Image (cartoon, rainbow, N blue to C red):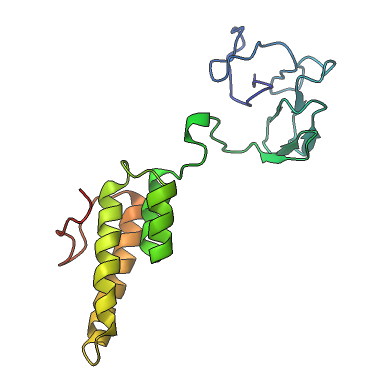
Length: 178
C-alpha cells in the first residue's frame, strides 16, 4: 500500500504511516487499486499515475508516479521524491559538490544553500580550483595553465558526481576550508 498523505510505501498490516504518521485507511490505495474511495477528500490515488487532484490539498499517492495537484494549484512530482521535510531547501551532498565546481556563483550557491558539512572536501577542492583558475589570465603561459585547469575541472566534476574523494592534481592538497 501507499500512504495517501506522503506517498510512502507501507506494509498492509500497519495502522499508521511510519514516514508521516498518517492514519492508514483514509484515502489509501494498494497496487491493484482496491483502496478505499476518496469520500472525505483526505487523499486520492492513481494506479496508472496520470494526474490526480485533491479538494483540500492534503496529498495524493500515484502508484506509477506521475503528478498530483492540490486545490492551490501546486503541482507535485511524486516520483523519486524525498518526503523528509528536514532537508527541504538544502541541496544534496552530490548536488552541492558538483554545483561548487561550475562557477564562482555556483560555489556561493552551494556554500549557502548546500550541505556544507557533507560536501566540505569537494567544496574545498572547488574553491582551490576557482582560485587557481584565475592564473589563466596571465599572458603567454595562461593558455598552458588553462589546459591544466580544464583537466582539473573535468576530473573534479566527475569525482564530485561519483562522490570519490580524490584530490585534484598539484593543487588538491591545499586546504582553504577547514
